[in-house]
Image (tube, rainbow, N blue to C red):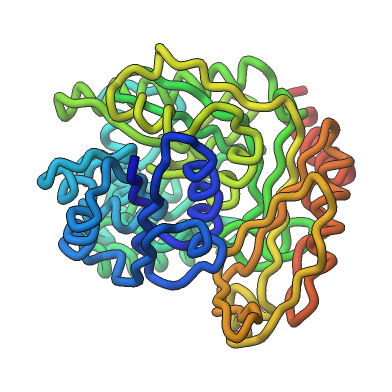
Length: 434
């Protein structure tokens, strides 16, 4: 089959490798917004264009006779690229524009889940103006302010992290309401966050390994939010979660899929990625994404044993229940090398050099280009390294060894996947639950 992949980050590099591994993939067709050397080397055809130009993507797919598509980033999904491809008979293992609202509109998701009695939601209110904001915020005590639309992972402001007083929070909410027409104010949850991504074929929901992401730029969860500095997973559950936590998160994903089908009369197809938080009162949903997480995709694809083309076909055909999806029972630790100054003022155009990788490490290119045989950073997260081993300590040591081998003006978080940091998570949840 000729398979179209849309996107050019490290997440898409991981997807590209998984697709190319399949004997069923005769040609990988890539439509990207920039050159990713890792993906380019796997592609039969690599085209650079605007990811928000659905018509150009449709023409590229049609001309190259794509059999189906996989969409990496959220923006083309929110713009309806899946719908446009379906007009020329090209199906996608990714959701339609209607379904993508689960990520592209925070107010849509909260209203949908409340309407269909999906558990795990916060107390919240959608505002179109400043009227009543302070009154509602005062009632909640501690708040989170969410911009309604896509903000590249930077549209969520949390009291205590991003602002200190209710007055500051309400000012942020007013600004978002003026820009987007809508804003969500909701209660703040206290606990530990985790990612549970599921493959969905419209009806059946199959979970991937549970993962924890690290958004803050610096060690010990300090500094500004980023796209994600790294992630880790265990062979089984994360040590600060119970089996009941995982069951509750799975159930929220299942109920959300049912709610979407009830709402729109058709099923959600693709990846449903729940950003959850374990609290003393059970699991709560922070937000949904409608595609693989980045870095979470790298952990998952480092463990996936099943043929990913088979998984995509089952999503499209609606028969995931007939496919046994297998993941290796190992630990993974992903660490990103990012340019100095990231995320607020990153250096650009600087050269980096990657040392030989130790066995057990997978490498994925992100915001890098290649010129005269050299890797050049373009300003965002540069390269991700995933250590895979039987124990988390070994996986962390492998990832650390790999990221330490990058020469150039970069930094990374040394603490991701370490026993000390994970133990802090365990102790925090223990104190919450006691």
